[in-house]
Length: 348
Ligand SMILES: C[S@@+](CC[C@H](N)C(=O)[O-])C[C@H]1O[C@@H](n2cnc3c(N)ncnc32)[C@H](O)[C@@H]1O
Image 1 (cartoon, protein in one colour):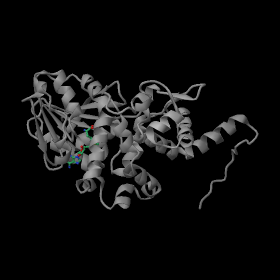
Image 2 (cartoon, rainbow, N blue to C red; image 1 turned 120 degrees about the vertical axis):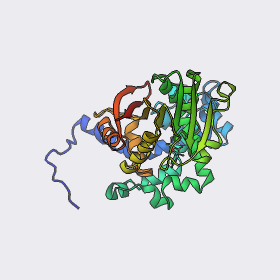
Image 3 (cartoon, protein in one colour; image 1 turned 30 degrees about the horizontal axis):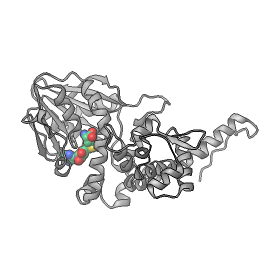
Image 4 (cartoon, rainbow, N blue to C red; image 1 turned 90 degrees about the vertical axis):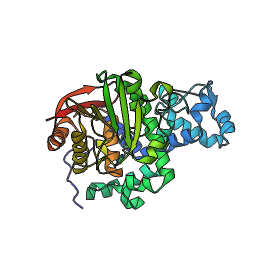
């Protein structure tokens, strides 16, 4: 092993240095934070707090858990702004914990259950393998590439589709409102999952029609059933590497390109380019983290992408290279009120 010879040693007498040491130890236990969040989601703790604060003993009675152990999880979560303990030992919801509630608009409970599932956790445990080999951990652990694996495991497919729909729901209307969609024409949501974004776009623009393209199982539980959308959309099961529906005025790729390596991403973009109606646009909706040290969900997603699939979060320059290879050119980047940006491209 090549151990660097440090010239700047930590100063063990300095309080700031010790804060750094404590920070490092706490970060190295970060998997427990994820596990505590999963426990809270599984036991519906946020739902039990929706009517007002409760002690750990009350929550334990309601959930059939061990009060002393539950309290220790709650205290840990309260140190991270998920729940807040008051001076009487009662726990309250926080703004973040509101999203842990089940069945409320914008609930992220299913997204938390997806991200903390063994699919993600065991793949990320192989991060060292990923960094050494440049390949995701998922196929090594589970025996097949991620989306191929989902084809053969209905429970994992359901977990993923439900989790993605929940992850997307708080973002969809904000993304739909951040782009000046045309008044008329066809929007094709490529790899659109259950159609949450397409639903919001069509509700905002009554003159538009839509096509939802995805693998068949994702389409089965689509969210486009309401009467306001009747006759304005169709679902198309398919493979976006082979082709996408022709004649779209806007092709949306939300959280799709970041799943794939450059070669695969160019194939998807090329399929969109071939289908594009004259004057049409391709929208890549992914997180574009700024080149700084600030926390950004896209930085965690970027690492998740390398452990699960072959993709990555891309900045504008990375995308420009892909656009050029697919016969497209970037026209603008529109920020959204979410952590995702909209990168617009047209035929080159
Ligand atoms: C990360 S999800 C994003 C879903 C949705 N756009 C969203 O933002 O919530 C990627 C989607 O791509 C779909 N997908 C993967 N491979 C595909 C393929 N070859 N053809 C069509 N869809 C595919 C998956 O089924 C999944 O719904």
